[in-house]
Length: 165
Image 1 (cartoon, rainbow, N blue to C red):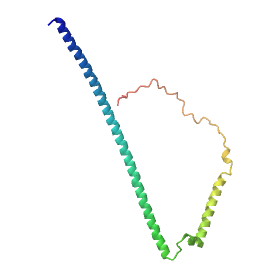
Image 2: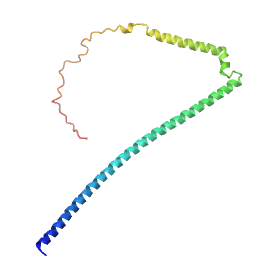
Image 3: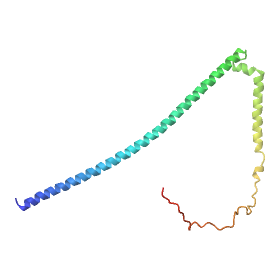
Image 4: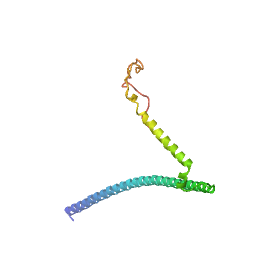
């Protein structure tokens, strides 16, 4: 065995070690990148779970609200049915056509129309006056002057407060 063969063998071992080191460093870098991706993905998933939880809570609230409104509507219908039964038991007319023939209904309808037309004319009369267009500027005077001190000099301001939190 000559020195050249030993040198060539050592050089081959060295080059193999360098290639192995480059391979291991690439693997470490890839693994680190993958672990960072996994951590970011966990954070994204946690954010999505939180958003879904909020949406589920909102959807549940809407559902419960709608159920409560539905139950209240059913209760109102039951009350109206009971009132209608007692109205019918008292011998009062039940159909809308019969109700419209009643004098009291006609008087109430006329009063309602009169009230609506009176309210509308009263509202429209508010715009008949052009007084709101006669706006005059007044002299500002010196009421806005609050003191005779000089302006604040903020450049020389120093604070003992520590800005760390």
